Image (tube, helix red, strand yellow):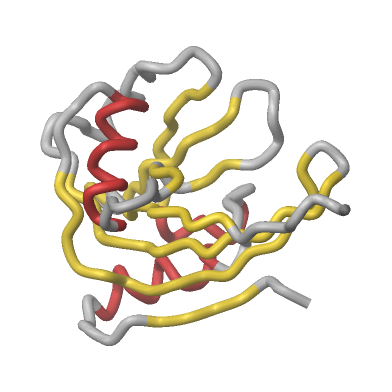
Amino acid sequence: MPKKKTIEIIARGVCIKRGMLLLCHGKGKGNTYLPGGHVEFKESAPDSLVREVREELGVKSSAKRFLGCVEHTFKYEGKRTCEVNLVFELDVPSVSPSKSPPSAEDYIEFIWWPVNKLYNSSLEPFVLREMIPAWHERRANAAAWASTCD
C-alpha cells in the first residue's frame, strides 16, 4: 500500500524591527523562510511558534495577532511537500536588526532583510514577499489567505 501523503501544519512568525524582517536560512540552502516550525499534536499554533523560536534562537518570544494563512507546495529532496502556514506577528524582545541573532541549532542561521526589498529576497512561500509589506503598512486586523498550490 502506498504511503499516505500528509499536509504539514506550520506556525510562522513575522518579526519586524526598524523596517527589517527576521528571516531564517538553512545553511547551504537557497531559500529563506520565517522563523517557526511544525505544530505538534495537542499544541496551539501560537504556542508552537513560541516553542520553535525558543528551540531555534534560545530566546523568549510571544505570538501576537494572527496575520493570515498560506498554503504552500514545493519539492524537497525530490518529493512534493504540502504545508499550511499559520502566520502570526511575532515579538522577540531580545533581538535587534543591528546584529544577526545567533542560532541555537547548527543547521540554520538568522538574517535581517529590509521589508521594502522583500521582492528581491528568496523568501518562501514567495507570496509572503507581497503579503508581509502589506500587513506591515496597514496594521489592519483583517487576516489574509494565499496559496502557491496549483
